Length: 163
Length: 446
Image 1 (tube, rainbow over the protein chains, first blue to last red):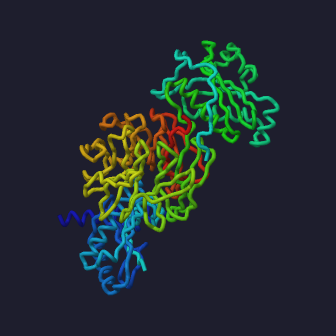
Image 2: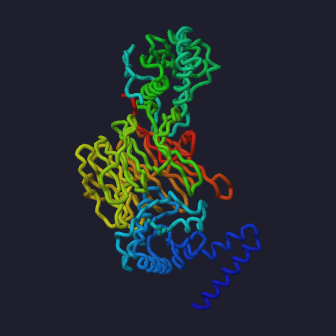
Image 3: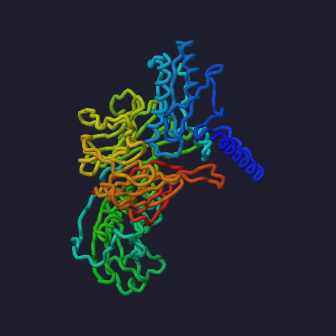
């Protein structure tokens, strides 16, 4: 099992090296994808902004999913702690989808993603009165690219200060 | 805008039921019917009067150009080159020399005449069967000069109906979303145009995001989604008066609106707590009814033309699929079972088919299936396309497609396209800006 995994990783690295050496212009893209996605969930920090020191503003989702990853839950716990410390701040959770879906379904999916984040904040003591959910579906991507990495950055729920 | 100003003045000769030429529109038409559209003849005085009013050199030719272009675009007819015509328009309209038209292989001939009468535009036209050497139809209209394009569309509809046995779709309009700017900050406006792309007009300024406009099949009302004040809500817009109002009082996002076939209700989705359900609102008494109640996403509802059933999109099986239920929400049945995801079901105005968008292995398809899900047929495949809308006669679908503008897959362009139900005759509809979310109106005259 373990050996298998090591072998697999070595192969992946080898493959990546091949890609890198084979095509110099593709270098950036190849390293990007490798370091910035797990499965098809974005794990990078390119687009992330901070509500406060150590409090990232957004969480990312897998294709067609609204399940929070371990990293997302960590981000939301930091947001909840920050919100508890700042009881006068209200937030809007903006839910988004990538462009690879029909418009109306994606509006609903964005709403579902933002609600997943809202539910988690509520279990950490944030009152629903302080949270508004707003879905943009696929209307407001952060990355206009049409590739898996760009789509992963766009599948997100962003916590925005409302006041 | 103009309502039904057009008056059907008189029918010169009643329609002959035993047509000789007939066009079969149920097959993909690889041999469009060759016909000749002789320019409508016009006397010099009328020509000058219309030139002054409409700034068109020869309004007779302009109207026949519209007829010619409509018939060609339908894919069912092949209008012949005017340079080959042997007979002058005015004489042809009196009594065509059928041998001459036969010689250039025209099977049907359209002739006519335009007059300026009491500040009005009077148009008469005739449809001739060349092989049988017979008149098939003759009609005359009188209207205000500004309606000249509509006269061309109505003639096209009459010819189409006479030769195919089905209603036309040329005297219609399309409402859509005009798009400009980078993808991350796209500016969207409601826009409306004639079916052939003429008379384009913007209905909103682009200050707020607008999506999915849909015509009321019974009037010139439109329902759409607007992010006015950053609150996504379904709105109702009267395109005659410009007045608009929010539909219902929902504590959250309403979206995916459509009218019922009688135009008296709006059916839409309401999203709350991560689930979207389907609701209707009666426009007369404002009564809201909840139609579906399921923890899944239920959206994109569309009524059957008799109003008894609703097709919609749900992910209750785990992924987006198409369902049909009774109008009260009972008897829900899944109808899509092919590979991939299915969305945006739209019931045909003829009642027999449901058009949809399908996603499979990174491609988007526009397709149709019977209302029980059988007979799935994919009409067109592309990188990205969605949102089919039916022509009022149920023979053509309009949709939008996004394409990449360079080989690296960067940049994009969104355009409206139409395709026949047969899968033939795919065409781009020209719009001044990028465009999406088209909705086809009913026939304006009838």
